[in-house]
Image 1 (spheres, rainbow, N blue to C red):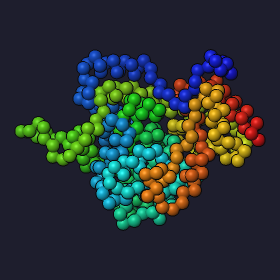
Image 2: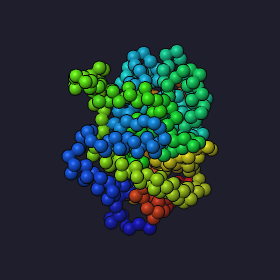
Image 3: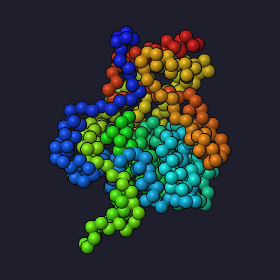
Length: 378
């Protein structure tokens, strides 16, 4: 059991694990003077990450949202196009579509994996649909074979939003490597972090070269003109300091993933057979990475808001599930149809503390608080 409330420190919902290796690599970059996007570390990070996810190419960018922006622009998504997105996702997935002048078309989730439901996908596709953004929510791989079959039949691009799924496997393939472009985030609460930061990966040389051109001001120096910009571009570049941090984190990712799996199994063991609690799905043929340790409060007697407050009083930080994007004020004009599964998951889900620095005694403490609350509630 942890110490009493006055001396106990807060248990965060997620915190990065920054160790001596990260500090060493960042110090080396700072001492070298190559602190911007120029220098060898960004390229090294890209090469290591593409090897990790088993793609031919990778482009490091300034954050995960920018990765989505870059992917959509490289695929030519623009005014008047439609892009199918899950409604249960972080806002960035949808915002990137809207910023391109395209229209997001929402699709409901599946209870099978909490991801986009392939059975509901085809009915929302129209002649204006140009792409599908598949989100591997909370590190659980989506049903890529079924989704890819639908995309191929309708000649649609696939972007994988793998911001929460570094290292997750669909069959023997890494998520992010299956569609046309995969997008990752390295925000502080992700599996590995560069503070902010992101990555686009692809197996297409054409898409890689197009993204490479766009992400750095559209610059392509020729023999006679250094500052030559054949297209309008952006500054989406990652810094060498971020890349150095990312390289160190990537060298530790296997241990991070193993630790998350151990923590997930501990949560399941200590909360086993507790009335009203359901765990995240474990679909066959995939390997989730448990970016978040998630539960559903499926019993009417367990009040989610009160449980969150009870945990908070004991210094335990949690997060409600994402709020369906189709219900956001700016997206009401795009929402058509019903989304019962997404709304059910959103209303009943809680993400428990999930960082790799979490200790077993803390998980025991967290689950004890939950068990006592549920016992009183029923």
